[in-house]
Amino acid sequence: MTKAQEIEKLLEPIALKERIEIVDVQYVKENDKWVVRIFIDKDGGVKISDCENMSGVFSEILDESDVLKDSYVLEISSPGLNRILKKEESFKRFAGSRIRVRTNNLINNQQNFLGKLLSCETGKIKMDDVTSGIVEIKLLDIKKANVETDI
Image 1 (cartoon, rainbow, N blue to C red):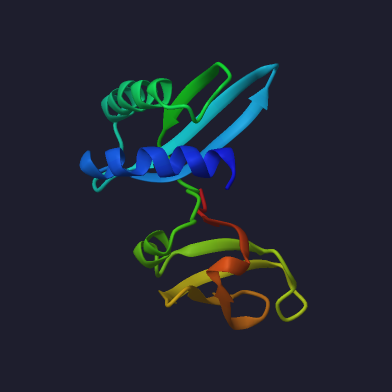
Image 2: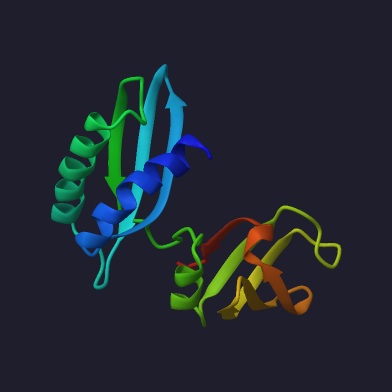
């Protein structure tokens, strides 16, 4: 389990109590300091006050736990327009949206997909890719996926 996964596992129950979804957790070293970057969402969208509140709550829990040994900077933000898709619930929520997917391995001689997310069921998505048409991809085969917003 990666450090980011450990952090998410620790904070998930608290987030659920607050009716907040943890969209993604990143644990990266930037300029000689560790950064814990947590993207949150909720029904109706995230406000600055939500980020401030969850920053205090998450910071206290992380400081009390032994998950992080080094000092760190905590950043809480909304996932933005091109939000990351990781969990099955997120894929279901964004069915009908245009998404971009990168897979771990080739599927039909292709690793990059762009198109409409048609559905998500039993651990796999079905999408209408602009290059190869209807394709099914197992969630476990997805390296990275996000909503693709045209601005």
